[in-house]
Image (cartoon, rainbow, N blue to C red; front, side, top):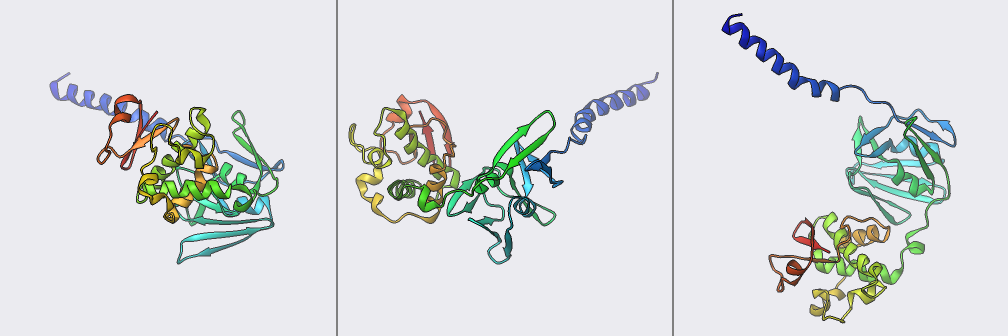
Length: 275
């Protein structure tokens, strides 16, 4: 075999090896089937990460008699059913159901003019239970009673102080960063080493002022609307800051005690989180 032939053969082998993983990845995956009350709906699904996304309109129609409208100017859908009102911003990371803020990190997915949301997030709004069968690749949804309204679910004082702390500490930060700040407060509430209410954690003076907005009085300012959403998301139980008990903006922090004595967890925006 001459030199040119050997080079050509080597290139063919290399190309086939490089192409193999892409061919495997392109193989079609099994369709996830959605059942509601034991009836196969036939709706299309998309798998994003570990979340099964379902078409908003079809899912709502399968669960209840709903009225659905689209506001093109605001780029959001409104769904009204018995006992449930929802607003879904296009490409948002959350939607509003009976005044409550339900969060999903990957956001709304749009395909062929249809909005897709995670089945578990939508089911929570309807008060439905979701069962996943990995063997048959099926999701079974059993309808229930729509979730409580925000007025009946969030403690008024908890939302009041948590949203103000988040706004004072992280106004202008991305939503995930604001959620993480709220997580720190709630992690302290649940830790056993701090007071057991949001108000008492924020105003804790056992080892000196814990949060600068308490000292500079910014804690009493009205919260930014995004901070109110972040507070609601935290009160729903969504966690992005793991077990973090501290955070700081290292660029402007007056003290480096946290950096020197605690374990690094993550950085979101201008804040670094520690435990």
